[in-house]
Amino acid sequence: MSFLPKPKLHHPGLLPNALGYTRRDYEGAISTLCAGCGHDSISAAIVHACFQMDLPPHRIAKLSGIGCSSKTPTYFLGSSHGFNSVHGRMPSVLTGANLANRDLIYLGVSGDGDSASIGLGQFAHSMRRGVNMVYIVENNGVYGLTKGQFSATADKGAKSKRGVANNDEAIDLVSMAIQLGASFVGRSFSGDKAQLVPLIQAALAHPGAAFIDCISPCVTFNNHQGSTKSFDYVREHNEAVNMLDVITGRDEITVDYAPGAVEIVEQHDGSLLRLRKLAGDYDVSSRAEALGFLQHHHAKGEIVTGLLYRDPEPEEMHSYLKTTATPLNELTEATLCPGSAALERLNASLR
Ligand SMILES: Cc1ncc(C[n+]2csc(CCOP(=O)(O)OP(=O)(O)O)c2C)c(N)n1
Ligand code: SF4
Ligand SMILES: [Mg+2]
Image (spheres, protein in one colour):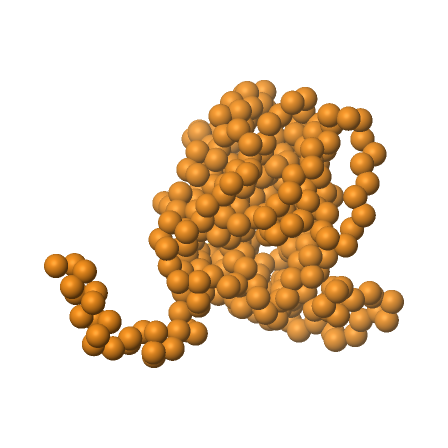
């Protein structure tokens, strides 16, 4: 993977966050993606979200598969842990890392090919197991890295750059994630930073499997007329159900919307989610409502975005498995080998 170091210079006016880090400390190498690629905007949103949340970069582990999207962890959080795995295998590598050390914040970055084609099984099982992570699919409807073949999220009837229509039904990862048990599910658009940044922040604060499908146009292979993942198409068909603000402890809470239009939800880390409802009484805590709403709007050719589902009482994999809270590399010999008396007691309890 090519690596271009960034100049160390930064503007003296750049303000540090509560940890004393500037935005620069959350960036990575200079991107080698095509100029204008939606994926770069998602990287910028991740940088912004983590900087604003004062997350210590060394506590974040970013994992990816293969694809232009999966290259992006090189371009953000340059001081965090990183692992670029095999095509479609990010979820199992992330699950293993999380099992070994639950102290880190896990950020999985994948593509629509990586997650909906070759990695569909892996995607599904990480959702149903409730792995505590933020899983972002940078969804452009094509295999960008291998030059623009339709992926499994390409809509039926969508046209390729050469004018060939896609005959296959599209897989909707958002509906699948909701159905499979993800406890936080949202969809956004790389061109809508105001919606995407707080969605990522809310997902980072969520203790469970958080999934974000982010439509991210491929300017080189899928940004033409006839594509349903182009900048123009997504802007024209975007149906946002809500807008989010994340309010951390030090922010002032101000509500300047009509009563009933705003819902304030407390998250498990104490931060507050301010949900500005845009679509009537849409209830983010109902899986059934979310699925019905998505199908209804998909039939009209609309792309529903926003926070679509959030379980108010999420559970995560470690609580089902009753694993130790201590990262495995911190367990000492005394804990791992408690001696023959302890072994005797254990054997006795099984007789
Ligand atoms: C096992 C395996 N099969 C196929 C490939 C070839 N390949 C590399 S990236 C890719 C698709 C990438 O598409 P996507 O995940 O949507 O990422 P994008 O480039 O569009 O961001 C494919 C098929 C591979 N690297 N490994
Ligand atoms: S080929 Fe498409 S997805 Fe890949 S970097 Fe270029 S614009 Fe982005
Ligand atoms: Mg893709």
